Amino acid sequence: MPRSDLFDVEYWELEQAKLKSGATRAEFEGKIAVVTGAASGIGEACVNELVSLGAVVIALDIDEQLTSKFDNPMVLSVRCDVTNPEEIEAALLAGIQFFGGIDILVSNAGNFPESQNIEAMDDSNWEKSLELNLSSHMRIMRASLPFLKEGFDPAVVIVASKNVPAPGKGAAAYSSAKAGLTQMARVAALELGADGIRVNALHPNAVYDTALWTDEVLASRAENYGMSVEEYKTSNVLKTEVSSKDVARAVALFAGNSLDKTTGSQLPIDGGNERVI
Image (tube, rainbow, N blue to C red; front, side, top):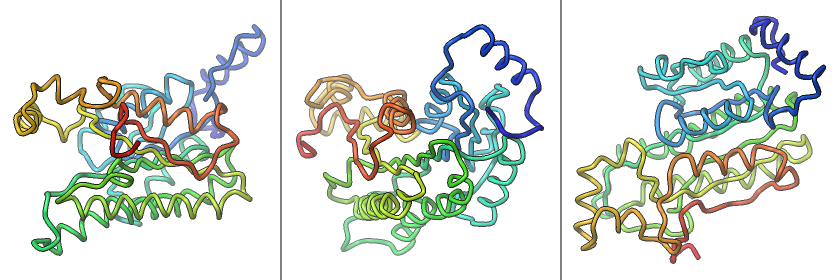
């Protein structure tokens, strides 16, 4: 159960009624999660998935629309630039004061920088990618660890990228950051196992219901490969489309009880990518 006296008393009354009735508890009831990059795409789907499974969520994003995104008492939305250590500390403090702790960290915030070959790489493009796609994840994990160590069945899920096992030309800034992020997740699994904290990574690919993939971008990429948009969106081994919700389900799998003996693993969510396989 949420461990803060500030949380709605009605929640406690509902929980007591469930216990008395013998009703089955949702998997994440009583769990408190932090989700970064929560305002759209995979992050938004993760918030909704965890809430649907009974968790309360501290939702973080720099997007000003975040505060109006979730009309749900189970979600506390806090604007936060995860590249700024002071903002991270303040956001986590606000969430912990409201809900009472942290049991799950979904470290998802990131972006895909402008495509540039190494020969033409702009220092700013490189450094911004490393800052958001790598360093910010270290900072949110570092700030969360004292609370995760006191959490219930604590888990960290890192959202990395297919570009780790299968990088592409022009994506050095992104691929290098995500590869470093994956290596950090592996080290964290080694360091935190003694504290009972599981750390696992996901490698999504071609998740088209995100802000990155506008209709124009999709049409352009499909044309480049001589495909229709629908063919392009399902150009994987299973001939299926991968959604943000699919990634969120995998996040819940790693954060929950089904894989509670698993840490340090990496899972592709890509419909089957030939280069990854």
